[in-house]
Image 1 (cartoon, helix red, strand yellow):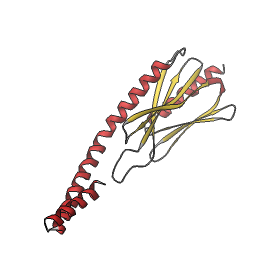
Image 2 (cartoon, rainbow, N blue to C red; image 1 turned 60 degrees about the horizontal axis):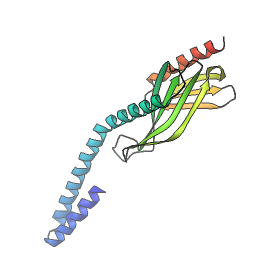
Image 3 (cartoon, rainbow, N blue to C red; image 1 turned 30 degrees about the vertical axis):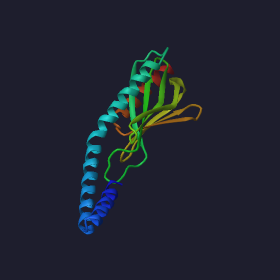
Image 4 (cartoon, helix red, strand yellow; image 1 turned 30 degrees about the horizontal axis):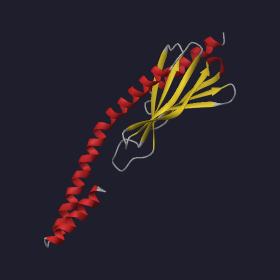
Length: 184
């Protein structure tokens, strides 16, 4: 929209000073310059916003958990929605926090981040899975993300998606170890 606005403004000023073609081209160049500057700023700074969202939502979850003896916690970020051309960040991000306790793991999906509005939204869900009710755990890696798939003995499935697949294998191993311990 900036490029079009600058083009129109240049054309209008050009008509007023009797040089519409020159001013339209100058407006187009100015609009493109502003757009490219904005694109660079967004691409260079969105990771900081995403890290702040991850840390703040993690802290909120840690404070809200009552009665669970947490031995470890893992946070995974996933994205949804596309982005405009040449813009790296997605429109929205979700945080999934996994809190490991003595007998269960709590999966918290209460927080999302709207990148365009730069605000955190709350309203997801939290679910507790007991280790002795988990029948299978597997990971799958794709081009831009990875998934941890937890299958319960009831047939229900819980899928956790992450942009950074490195921690999913550790969580899978930890879950499998806790499943074996719970069944002894």
